[in-house]
Image (cartoon, rainbow, N blue to C red; front, side, top):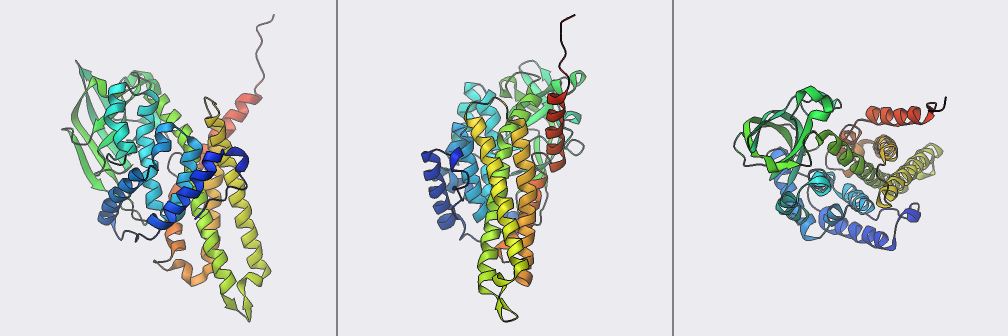
Amino acid sequence: MMPDTDAVRAFLSQGHLTMAAEAATFAGNDIAPRPEPRDDRSARTEARELLGMLGRGGWLRPILAQDLRGCCLVREALAAASPLADAVFALQALGSTPLIIAGGPSLRDRWVPGAVEGRLMSAFAMTEPEAGSDVASMATTARREGDHYVLNGIKTFISNAGIADWYTVFAVTDPNRGHRGISCFAVPAETKGLRFVRALELSAPHPLGEIAFEECRIPADAMVGAEGEGFKLGLATLDRLRPTVAAAACGMAARALAEALAHVRQRRQFGKHLAEFQLVQEKLATMATDLTAARLLVYRAAWEKDGGRERITVEAAMAKAFATEAAQRVVDAAVQLLGGRGVLADHPVDRLYRSVRALRIYEGTTEVQQLIIAGELLKAAAPKTSDAH
C-alpha cells in the first residue's frame, strides 16, 4: 500500500518519493501475503524470517544512514502490511542507533553491519519492573571491576527478548548521580550471566519478554559512549525515532481507512450502499483528516532532523502523541464501519485493532509526550534573566 506522499511532498526529496513507492511494492507483494503468527512461538520464528527479508531487500539501510524520513517511509509501508514486520524494523533501529551515534569503531563494526544486513537481531533493554516512564529510577547496576563491568538486574517488556543476538542495555554505573549515573552497553546474547526469564504474550503476537543479568561480566569496551552518558544517549535515540513510531501509526491508520472505504462502497443496507449515508461520510472525513494531519507532523519532524537540527524534542513528541492517538481513533472507526467483520480474528482491521494500542505506550506514553511539549513551552515562555544591573 503506497503511503500518501502528496500531502507531505514538500518534506521529501525525489529519492524519498522513489523509496516510498518501492517500499510499498515490497510490503504489498512480499510482506502482506504472509500469514499472521498464531502464538508467541510462531511470532518469534516469523520475526527472524522478516528480519532476513528486510536485510536482503536493503530496507534497513536508512537506519545506518540515519535518514529519518527514509525510516518513516519504510515503517509506514511495513505497518500497513504487517505490524510485526514494522516492529522488527523498529527494534533494529532502536538497538543500532546508540551504537551509530556514540559507539566506538569496534562496537559499530561488530554489530551494526550485521543488523543492517538482517543477519543480527538487536534489542533495546531500558524498561524495568519499576522503571518505565521514570527511567531515572532504573535499578539495574553495572559495577566496574578492572577491565570489566558486572551487570545485575532485570529488564522487562523487552521486544526480541530471547531471540536477539545482542542487547543495547542501560544500567546504573554511579548510583549517587541519578540519571547522570546511567551508562549504556552492547551485551551479546550468549554472555554468561544473561538469562532469558520468560516470554510476555500480547494479544497481537509479538516477541516480548523479560531478561535478567546475574553477575553478567562484560568487557569495559562494551560500553557505548562515555560512562554516565547512557541516559542522554537513550533520550537522543528516542528523540530521533519517535517520529518513526508516528509513521507506523500512520501506516496502520491508512490501512484501516482503505479497508473501511472498500467496505462501505460495497456493503448495502436499507437499500443503498453504506457510503451514501451521511454519518458514514462524516466518519470517513474525520479519519482522513486525522491521518493527513498526523502525516504532516511526522514528516515535518523528520525533515527538521534530516536538515541538521540537533534536537527535535517538541516536534517528535507532537508527532508521536498526535499520530498514535489519531491512529487509534481511525482504526476504531474502521471497526465500527465494518461491523461484525471488523472483529473477526482473520480480518486485517482486527489485527490493526490489536496492534495499534501499543503505539500509544512504547517509546514514551502519550502523557509523557504531552509533558515534554508543555515543559518546552513553559521553558520558552519563562521571563529571560538579565545580567544588567
